[in-house]
Length: 227
Length: 256
Image (cartoon, rainbow over all chains, first blue to last red; front, side, top):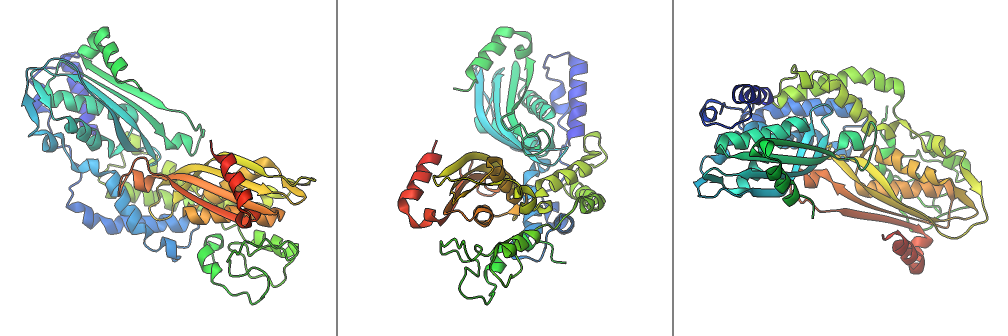
């Protein structure tokens, strides 16, 4: 869960400054799941009842044709949108780390990301760009996208999401550096509240050489820019 | 209390008003009846006489929710959201989630504020007599709605065109009509039609065309997960339906 990883990040940075070392790797792979996939079915009725309540209190008629099965659909939808709580990094990464004598930057950019704002429970979505410099260990490329999925399919705050992705990769690979940039549109700002249609929020997390060396950071930002 | 008359669009289409000659059953054969007072409004009670006052009657039936209702429903909505948070495996007591049920509840009320408003309030003052009979188009109206099947946002753009018949409407009122109908639990097809019908009833124009192009988060964020898919729906009434050249002009002018 998010608080546990928050603790990890705290420990991480207070103990190590910002250097990524090996000893933290095994210690901090706590089980982050706060929800078991098998429990989802059993929790559906409670969610359904809550959604039926919501529909009624919004002034809708829950017996009209279009809304008859909406509580069930909405409950399943929101379980899907928060399925990141099921998964841990260990589960998806364990097999796909390879020893490779490569120490140049690897970037996976334009990863579509969909998350839920934890303050309004309204979607925010955008693109994630990830770069890392391997230290003899490279990771399967799709695993970077899967890490994004694990952390984004939760009730999130964009700042925390960025950091969780960065620390997740750091812990798994112990690379020389990790950089994560997220650019997203927040429906809570677009559809309601200030209603600024075109506003985008950009957050970034730089660890290791990306933090220390401006030229490395610059290369990453240049290569991951919108073309 | 029947709380969603204006959304019982499909069921009203099946109602038989027994009047005979004017457009009933909600079936639009493209005829915009001016003398007879216009086609059946969505969600209207059957009005026995077809005059402008009947049209006004139908507008009066639209409101189902008041600000007081909102106040009173807020605690129950917040409680429902707390249940949802718990059911998802989150801890509602952590700092970031402490006031989320209230925020989510107010947000949801905002997304369905179309239920609080009536067309008649929005339009009453802004209909002007103008000797203009050329096409008027307002395009690229940003639209945000909620899918009634998954309670997930829909957003896109609405393009509206109409041929006035001596009466024009304040331009922002077209956007306000879009707001009233889109800020509800909707189905894109129904939304398009409701907008077209509202304009028809307000102005009795020679023709109305409405095109909506939208992205459905229920298809993008979940389910089939097709990132770039868009859904386009249109409603053409009156001249726009009968005359291909008019329709053509409209469609060409809204293309960007």
